[in-house]
Image (cartoon, rainbow, N blue to C red; front, side, top):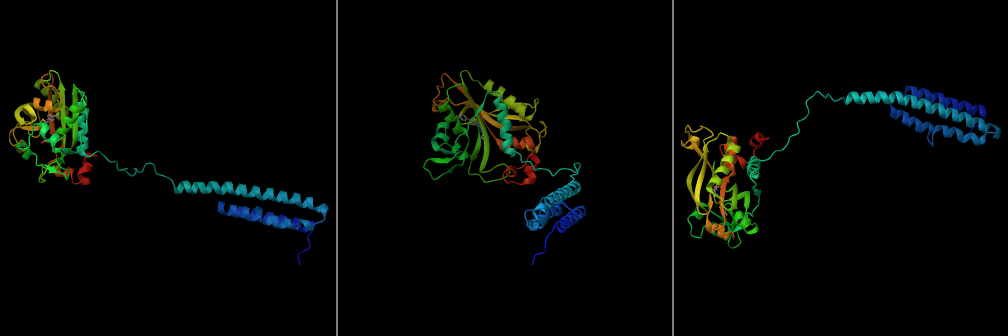
Length: 350
Ligand code: 2U9
């Protein structure tokens, strides 16, 4: 049987709820408790609401009084909860800040930055030098046809040079993995009109036993310039600039007679040994010089295969092994290091 309600008793209940809640708010230890208290006391199904449910049992003239008291209680409780939340809130923030204090003096965790593979970095450095002389980078296909890779480079089927480049044929008749990027220059001559200044970096393939200086996959950068009146002197001047940019402005250079089926005359281009500076050491097989690339005037027959009139235009070309250049620049003794993805080695280029 529900207790009879009257103004005095409800007022006492409301004040008791207020005092109890204010005390609990003062005693609260964290804001979460305060939020729970607010819900429990002021919530829709809270204790204040519960007390007020008895208001219906009061005489009509007493109800507004209880309403006013209930309002005072609600304001007092809200005030007490807000004040406690303020205090506890800043305490909790200080505690979190203290707990999360970042000692900015502690060294940061190194973000391991990647870096270009030394071969790509070297190709980039080479391309940068020749770009200053107007050479544009072209890419040729890695799977080539025999005609473009050999015939058009003046290497007929029975030419001994073919053996030089033990070829990896693919299961497409007359097709192979390119043995040099030279077929790319043939394609450039077909798509461009002189003056042409083309640089062709890329991966090449040969049927090679892998050792410290040979691999079945390797990188080359070849270059071609075709224009009226192009001479060996232009070639020498350009390659000297290249050697000085890569190996130092005072690095001595020399041309030595060479042979390639696609250039006539052909030369080997040497720099003074970067190890012994010409004093003759094992690294330069006691010659004092190191060959860094081959070059020559484009053979008129090859210009013809490129659809260019050899009577009107002359051209020169050069070709280098990227691993060789990288070895000399970074004193790397064995090109297999470029293929093994050993982070201890690659990390040195970071
Ligand atoms: C065309 C005409 C001429 C490209 C050339 C070389 C000399 C050369 C070697 C360097 C190291 C190959 O990887 S390697 O062993 N290449 O020495 N390459 S002239 O001559 C060309 C190419 C294309 C149309």
